[in-house]
Amino acid sequence: ELDAEWNGLSLAERVPASVAEFVLPGAEIEDVRILNALMPHGRGPTFRSGTGEVSAAFHVKHSVAEGTVDVVADDIVFENKGTPFFGDLEVHAQLAEGSLVTRKFDLSGTGIRLDDIADKAAGDKEQRKREAWFCTVDIDKGEVTLGRPISAAGSVAVTMFDTRPVVALLKDLGTGPKWLGLVPTIKNVGGTFDVAFGAGTLNLDEVALTGDGLEVLGWLQMKNKKADGRLLIDYKALIAGVRLDQGKGKVVLSKPRKWFEEEMASRPPGEER
Image (tube, rainbow, N blue to C red; front, side):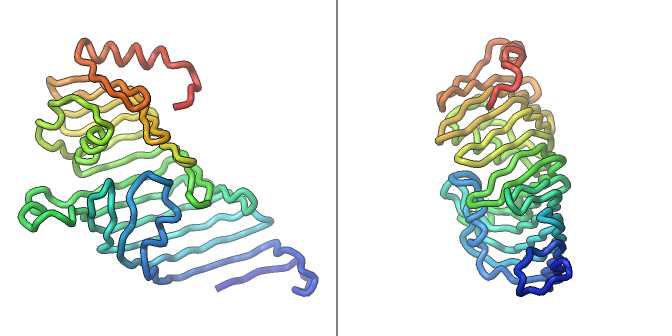
């Protein structure tokens, strides 16, 4: 459905529209693999199969656009680090102050949810034992530049069923205290962080996550498949610092909180992560 106004002139004059309305009440996504073009290169999951539905509504005035995009896809299959998973995806994007020239939009108020996520390779008994995983991400403030791949930056609040992705990330980085893999899976994880990705980089800053007896603080920068960062991981009576420099990790066990506070205090203001 399209409604446009051309300043009262005929279409033959080829004058750009001053006002346009676009409404897509609901269209089928026949193959979710089309969403891979929007994912940051080399980061995040790769969609393998499944279908979904997309709806959108936009208002454009003098090349400034705003509107909403909603994507719902159930029972999709995606892959992360070579492991296949299946589950449900919902994206409810609020796009404002968008420039049709730069393709940059304000993302504040956007929400993303992954639900009923399970390891496709695991048997039924193992899946029941692990329980399905979920995660919600709410973007408090942020902006996105639409392209291939997409780039974005913002401040987010996250809620996760448990710490499995956190442990998997540290394992993938080849670092982290050994005891983290021995403690029970920690549930009810939530917190905030600043995120920016694009052009082969992923930055996580001002990370503050908590769970049942867990606290994770710090920052991470991943570029060209190498990571830099400083983390503090505190679980009940167990505490450790993690230092990453160009992909090389070191676990700090001697006065880790003091070490972490000194590392954060010595960070130059505005230093790029």
